[in-house]
Image 1 (cartoon, one colour):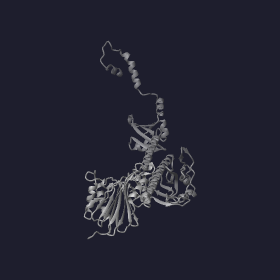
Image 2 (cartoon, rainbow, N blue to C red):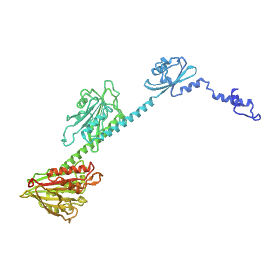
Image 3 (cartoon, rainbow, N blue to C red):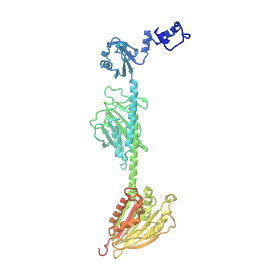
Length: 590
């Protein structure tokens, strides 16, 4: 009757369109039936038992009135008639006693998540879900993120070092304690150590302040299972130590589950050379090769104590990935060390030599490479002793850096050889030009040098008589006693550019107190100053020399280099070479 009344109030209708009450009642009865709950208790029970979560209902007194089938599986201790606050399910009982509406806890090896809903008449229902798989997926995702972050962090740290020893120490410290309780890198000593040298190692263990290095014994690779194979580049399986009755420790390797063979006491003795004395009995160990571009550079040993879980499949994969990155970093450090050694040898052969002592002559040289950390470039100077005095050379080869340094070496070696047959500057320059121009096309393409060659002898009055030949080089400057600065005019063409190049020779006399400064264009073309773009220039150079007149060659060179450095103010520069020559006899009246 109420339903019918509510339908009649839906809106005004005319008497003609009004339906009889008897016609409206069947629809109203069906609507009420649709909205009513099932009255079949068996059907309701089947619906509850089909749910994927446990459902437990209790009355106002907290006595269980219903528990569905999933509740019997997840919470077998909860049965109808039991009191929720005293059931043998601690997290549920504690939630009921504390008035909580939610709980999360582990019970019977499962991660449970429960939510309370209030019912009529003071009762309640608890809906408990098995969240074990969800938690496992979450934990796996977090663990994978942690591994990815570790590998990224390790790659960044390993990439920062180009020094072999630092790379080794970084490799073992990064692995502890995330991957293992102790990490050891066993490797062969690099050259110049003999090929038959025994292995050396670097170790870091959790609880120790710093890595420790050691060596040998020679039989070490054979005493640790899998180490010899790892040093040869072969992969080995994780090997747990089976403690007492622990026979279930089996690593997952390469997608298959294989039985773990326990470490024997004889095998453990090999690890004794590598682990701290108080480390304790190993629980699991993994030996992995460290591979570089050219082959195996070492072996990484990861050791976990007996109280820690062994290496599972993902652990093994992470260890191998870490070992690969550490091996690549170590190989890069080795390559850098070899290149640095070769560059140092090249540098020692190309740097300007120590100037000889020649009676009656004072010499000084200055050198700066163009922003090259190896301190080698395309500018050079050289002085040789002869029977009646000496010869000198100062040049500037085309280019800069290592390529220019190689050409510098060719020019210097050619000069040393050609001086044996021709000491005269002009004739020597012509021979050098022919030697460089006749080189194979690939060797001489776009390669030439500007050059000053000279010889000097000491006169009876202490003055120096010089012959200077020029090959397209800036004119040297003579600094007089009174501060007058004048150029020594030499022209000529660059050496090695043309087969028919012409060169010019000039003779000058340096009186006591005078000084000859030969320099490359890196001095005058140094850009800096207030606008950082202005050249130092020849005019400024002459002013510096004039203000320093009377200084000995060493002090003069230092003065010029100091002012050029201040002019550059840290900016990049071209190669610079300078050579100062002066008589050692004091000027008259000094």
